[in-house]
Length: 137
Image (cartoon, rainbow, N blue to C red; front, top):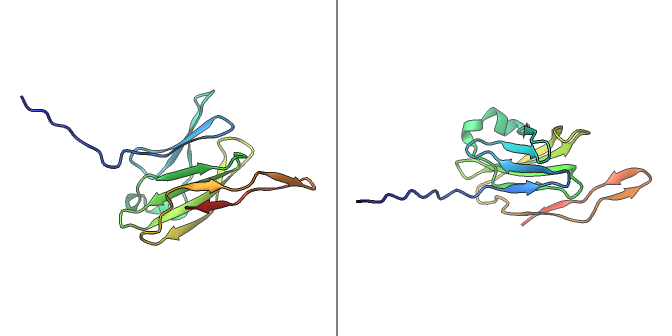
């Protein structure tokens, strides 16, 4: 009797749970961020940034996903198969399933983010909200 064990080297996928009970995760095989509202089981896909959407076969699923403490900003990093990658920042609309790409930027080879941290807390000044800044480690 022989036993074959298959090992997947890239099995870890990021997961974030927001204050509004939305769980953000990486698609298992495609370069998409999947979101699921925990209490209603509503599922939706976050729109990909232009370079990822127009060249999906060049990209892997996101390896970093981070939601801001105020639930209004989302960051994800999409690595390419050639070692480069694209980081994206989304802004949430009025609905929990309404996310718009605010900006994206390329990462050269060997410069991928491995973790994120949102600094500070939301603060309100004269009815205008200013939000924290994110840094990469």
